[in-house]
Amino acid sequence: MNRPYFQRVFLRYEVPDEVFKLLDSRELFEGERKDVRLLKEENFESDTTAYDCPLPPIEGQRSLCLDAGRQYSPTIEAPLSPADGQWVRAEATFRCQHKEWNLWQMTQFIVRFVNGEEIVKERAIRVYRFLNDGDTKRLYIDSEFPEAPFDKVAVYFWNAEGSKPIVVDELRIEVFEQN
Image (cartoon, rainbow, N blue to C red; front, side, top):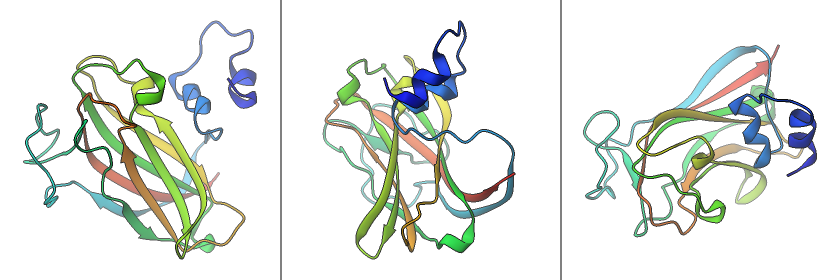
């Protein structure tokens, strides 16, 4: 529990799924996006580190597969400067076989702002908060540009020492302005 989440759920009977992102990231873009621009797309078809996965690909011949033997995805980076917008949205499709109930082992979807080799800001959401057994869902995480200088955005996935397989596909990184 944190202050942004508490303020959104206090004395409410129904809470939109998006509000659960506040448990992890403390940022939630609400409103209309404008001047949306695609920075990077990745479909993992050319991922040479892919190996046999118990789950079928989401789209095409390959999807990124994380499990006990592969905890981290490759980092997907795109050049970015403070003049490019106000927010970044990273969006991907996820599929699981069985839900991970242990909070500390839930796969994380992570967005970083980087300046050179220094991490300036990082936001993450736990994807199993939104997935149940056998689900395939499109999820996104929004992060506001930091005040500190940065020169790129990096996105990756971490299985958090979990053993349950999860596949990820159709990653998009976009930049946009707040309306």
